[in-house]
Image 1 (cartoon, rainbow, N blue to C red):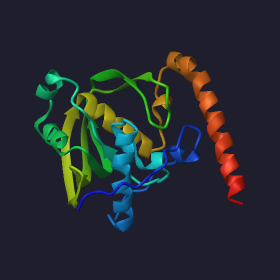
Image 2 (image 1 turned 90 degrees about the vertical axis):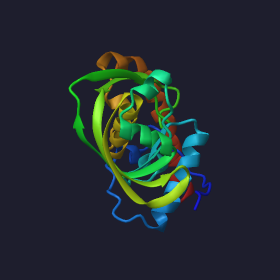
Image 3 (image 1 turned 180 degrees about the vertical axis):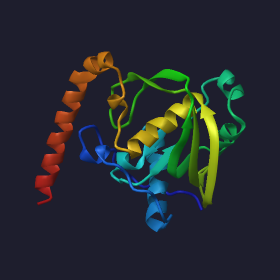
Image 4 (image 1 turned 45 degrees about the horizontal axis):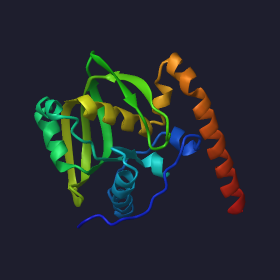
Amino acid sequence: MFFKKKKLDICFYGNPVLKKKSAEVLDVNNEIVELAQGMIPRMIDSDGIGLAGPQVGRNQRIVALNIPFDDENSQQNLFPEERLLYELMPVVVVNPKILNTSQEMTCTSEGCLSIPGINADVERSAEIEIEFDIIIQNNTIVPRRKMRFWCGQLTAVCFQHEVDHLDGILFVDRVSEKEKQRIAGKLKKLKKIVTKSLKKNDLNNK
């Protein structure tokens, strides 16, 4: 079965749903499958490489991924299991857990579909051990499939970014004080616009 396109709205910085911790997915029922089917096209249409449940208004531990290869070097440096994951992209996974992290750190410029127009340097673990269940691979719904392996580079950064989303943490919460000061004005402006829009929608729905 192939995913069908379902329009999902992105939730932006200032929306309370982004700051809530998400619940574990206990059952991959029709509701979860429908959500997963909508997340891949929403992510791809937005030129994203990752999209978490809270970003589409659902506080459940579900993530869509479409991580690209950076260059020939990065392909050669992938862990074997990590390479397999890339071959299955795009994927939708549930209940991702970071089991271990390396002492080595890496600093990468990050952005987010929920915080458009803002990028900032974030320091994260260079390598992590990750565990999750795949429910969609190569655009096809599959029986729940567990994977556990070490990964690095963009894969590790992306998983840490998305797991943060599931815990109500945004990448701007992890930047240095210097970076916070640099982007503070843009964040304040975005939050003001989003808060005003949410209040307007609440009034219209009453």
